[in-house]
Amino acid sequence: MNLNQHMPMFIKATVNVFKEMLDLKVSSGQVENEGEGFLSQGFTVMVGFCGGWRGWFFLDMSQATALKLTEILIGEQYQTVAEEEVLLSGAEVGNIISGNAITNINNSQPGLNIRLTPPSVFAGEDMSLFNVRLSAHSVIMQTEAGTIKINVVAEEGKG
Amino acid sequence: MDIKYINSFINGFLNVTEMMGISGLQRTGLSKKAKLRTDNDINIIIGLVGDIRGNVVLAMHEATACKIASTMMGGMPVEKFDAMPRSALSELANMMAGNSASQLEGLGVKTNITPPTLIHGQKMISLISQVETIVVTFNGNEGQIEINIATED
Image (cartoon, rainbow over all chains, first blue to last red; front, side):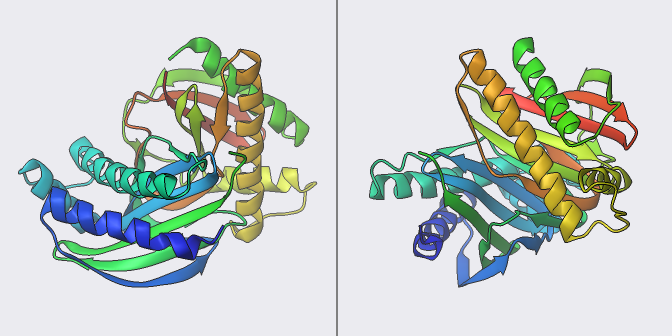
């Protein structure tokens, strides 16, 4: 499995979802290989996959960006990411991006049958994430609400 | 959530910790997660897909994580939470999830698990699976460990 080859699916899904759900233009950077661990900007949405692939999709941003996205989605201002609506909004955006990308990947490779876990969100200070023995492919993207980063780690699953 | 599923996770955790030499663990609490903020700076999440869908998070303080890693490595001192304890704790969570998935399969519930992701940070807030989370707390020689179970079934 060559994850580099599939990163455009995740980039495209992110650009589309930000445009359609949030009316935000996204400009994408280059795909980079970050190794086993990466530092979070303070707010990370994560969706796992099982099936033909086993791994995770991460949508990472600063807490300020998460607050801005929530304001756009819900139409109300929130002061802190400790408010449940902020976590739920982030989870929803991450869920839709990963759902779109994985649907396209499944359609392009019949039999792969990747299925997604529900999204989880972690926010905090000095946060870092590790996936033992798996290398994260990441792309930094710029939006009007701030910098976002998508990371994907995956290995072949049992199907 | 069906209680028999929770028992599979509790048994999976106890089986694996015993195998790793982490003894004397006592279950000290079972509750619904009441707040989003967590005092635990180490969280290891594993996703579940199949007949039940959700996430399980093993959570603890950094000091507890270092002690567990030390026990897993035959008593070798672990003073800093670096690559070695990260790897050991991820493996523990992976084995726990695998053992729990086997137990669930014994009940006729087929589940696949994701690889573990370890999240290390301060002043953390978490929302797991967007559903009600059950927290099972254990106390042992190494400190307190929590299993957060959030599944849709």
